[in-house]
Image (cartoon, rainbow, N blue to C red; front, side):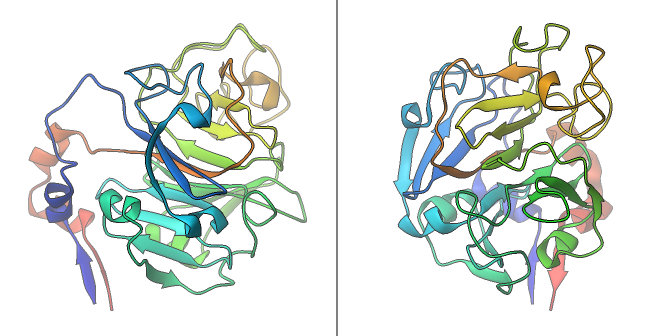
Length: 279
């Protein structure tokens, strides 16, 4: 039995004073290189205008190159779907960067086997807008469909999901939720789009793109056919990096930290919500 609580936030150093800095973003490539960026267009090493190789090299963990994706939750945990389709976890971002042995959360075959370069899932992410998780699924009946989970356990076990079959992104190689608003508005391809993309992905060709919503009208990554009013679809993306990011990426995530004011009001009930107990 194990328990993850607010103590992990303190131990990992993620519970800190509010800062004007954007969230750190980590990406991993097929060689297992872990590189970090200081936001989309913020800080010394932003994503905007840069390729994967321009990021800060945090570590090289060769085994990560075979994973289908990674994500992190506000308690500092990191989760990855491995090449066999099972879900693994690390107790902190520091442990993940160090290449520590992972904890097996669910067995191989929970998701399809492969990697985001050569099959399997096209991306996984925690979604701070809903508090749940989403994955982009390969294969029939529609390649690239969106699968959403309300809870961590549902994501780990691939159960109790809802699915949007409006598949536009079967070529994805990474997808992630990003909490900050520093992504600039892109005049290409849709000049009506607003700045502040919270949903990013990397295409099979290595292009980094963003949307302001995931699957609701208004420049959503998944939605009805594209139009200038912003009702979803690939051509309604609100951000596009001016530099090719790289087609060797296998996954990425941004660091999502709970609002300090919210944590101060959580009390005992909030501690229970931030805890996860499984036996």
